[in-house]
Length: 460
Image 1 (cartoon, rainbow, N blue to C red):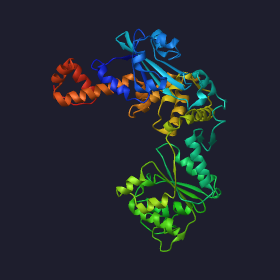
Image 2 (tube, rainbow, N blue to C red; image 1 turned 60 degrees about the vertical axis):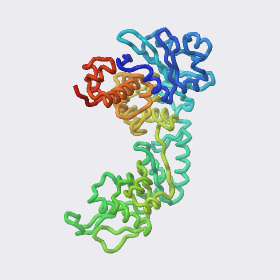
Image 3 (cartoon, rainbow, N blue to C red; image 1 turned 135 degrees about the horizontal axis):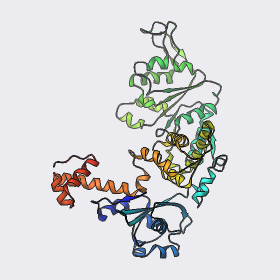
Image 4 (cartoon, helix red, strand yellow; image 1 turned 180 degrees about the horizontal axis):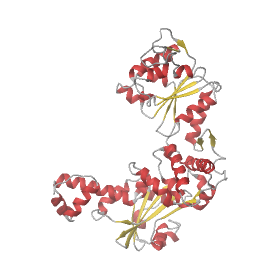
């Protein structure tokens, strides 16, 4: 991949941005001479900038500071290089070297490193990680808890599953929280299937998907003649359908306030009153709810009843996002790769370069996004080995609107952010594109073009 240096960015504007990135960043010139590194780089490699500035990467490699030197390979091959290796302390690092060009001339190399020691199965050789993902290999899945689509290799997810197993044995009301796509529904199903109610029904209700004028009758049912268009014999609601089982109220934060009052009554009285009915019906159901929103904040805003919140939140389970449990990424990829290979009649695997990209990606859509991307890759890749060119088609599209580690690893993205900020400041100060051009020492058409690129307004 080839990046050209934007014409308006200055190094003194760029370095504070790179110093604020959590990953290690190292800058070498076209001769392989160290020019700068950020604070995380000093910490990761146990070095001081003043000791290595002005020294060649060959010397630093011989001393074992950067082994192997990614910069040296980038300068030799004039392309982006990604490897997995160890530092002097034995920490496993994922390192990417990116060449920068001024036209056709290579001007510098930006190297970024991330500590992936927690993903211990990956090893020091990315090709070995790719081999472990070959169809039929169970190296990742054997050491992870896998049941019902849930993968728990990381300690945070093991803690979640340990709590879920304890709660499955009791009847307590449970509130499951977590970002969209983390698998809250799978946790709810586990509570049911491993509990005393496993022989009863498991009824899922998406509170955000039912029109407000129908949700009461859908939850509690209705009697004959309750309203125009109702069935002649009435209809059972979700609560009655879940009798002796579990009702899972997903997106509980979307339940209208008037229905929140009625749900509170159901929890307190253990009975429901169908729409149009006079008598209540006893119900024996376990209530499990889930949300990706902060209910405490909604309570403060008056959008969710405080008394209902405390009734639902008897025992909370928080499912961490995938970016906070990287050990689960490879087992999940393995699981979905095997599943979709089988269902689609394929026998595909993933290259080491593509795997490196998937490890770096923050998965803003969590497990749901990972599942969808693996399925798409198997369907769309033209060879039996999924390569980085296949990955970027989907990863870039998915990352465009979401700040991610890929942005941190891509100097082009950091440069664009800095350039946009400079343009915004200049526009506010100068007021016109001509004045901006004078200050930034570029042509006025260049300013107009860049303002258009970033969606910024400006006078001519």
